[in-house]
Length: 606
Ligand code: ADP
Image (cartoon, rainbow, N blue to C red):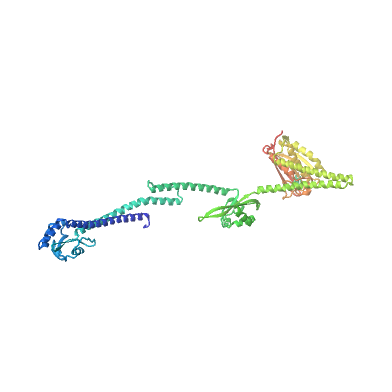
């Protein structure tokens, strides 16, 4: 309480008022005393001046023997001009200061020898006034015709004292009332000054607590009013800035949470600060118990999990503050991991942390991988027949003595390899056109029964050659189908020829066509070698063959099913293979009644 501004202002104002009143009172007392003494001195000087009548008469009085009586008489006559009253008396003294005559004989008999009397005894004028004495006096020595007397006037200053006492009393009374008025006024004045400050303080406290809606009710044209207005403006600016910051923060948080990439933020000590949904998913922090585990998840733990070289990262990171490690394989994913420097504030200090962005590049990685594998496969597939051709031709060239039949065998082998190469290149061209959507489609509407019959005709010789029984059946009244007849034929022939190829001689192969609601369904079934469970999902990959040598012997390129799938996809259809090793394979083709080749980017020609 004693330290608050209100109290201080009251005390300062009261002390100030008191000080002024004391000073004024003291000045009044002093000037009263001064005035009294100056008035006395000047009155005496004019009365006892050398040219004055009183002086002339006093000197004349020395002519008579009882000059002091005469002088007493004269002084009595001049009583009023000397201001003689109850408190002021005049005396005629001899040269030793002894009383001769005067206005008060009793006082005169006990007269004290004052410094001014001593001066007069020495023939000098005694007119010194001493403010510490309770009297004021004036002594003048006069002499004529060998006679000398000292005229002495003494004032007890009773009048002056009662006057100054009165002034003192008035001053004390004024001080008392002044004190009360000063206290009351200063209280209200201090209140007028401190109240707006108090309101401002309350307002500032509210702002500090985040209450921006409350307005600060301090008005006025003075400095406090201006301060309050500035404060209100500052509050509005602060609120807008905070709103903007919190908006940005919300945006950032939403982005952070729902970002498709995993983001993890570590502090300077490598401890986890933030982790987004994707990162939790990636590192499998799913269950509520994993929260504790997550807290232990440090930067080095993450680096270890991802099997990244810590030394390499820290060296590169030191140089650029931003470093990317590509194609980090974690579980079944390929990731590009970016390490970025970031600043944050902790206990008012600026710190540097590390932000890790884990971008899933599995798609790109797989594509690159399959491209690389594809190029390697193509090279390998083309090299094999080339080696065969070279070997056969070289044998013929290096052995001119070979008999005609052997020579022909070698040359036929070379031709066969050439045909194989041609098939591979042809299939690759077909796939490349399908991939680049540059295949020209010939759309026509045709009878499905005739389509199946035709395939049967084409494949029967081949099936017969292997001793297979080929049966072809079509649901009665099956509707016509619209699509690229030739390419669909190529697909079914490929499937049937696979059945022929991969079924031991004397097998059973059936082709059956039926109508579904939206699709024509063609099933090719055999009782051949079948395909293992592991091979089945990879069967549509380019150049994938279950048993390379067996497939090559059978004349396969490993591209037939890949082409079939692309053609059916382009038609909006599908191909499903079910197989049991040693029992047989069933391939089901679904083809929409009206193909969607437009959407596949193909060209129509009817
Ligand atoms: P290929 O030209 O070698 O026949 P495909 O793409 O048509 O190539 O077939 C891929 C592989 O699938 C073949 O190499 C073969 O091993 C297997 N395959 C396809 N059809 C059958 C089937 N009916 N029975 C057993 N294996 C099959």
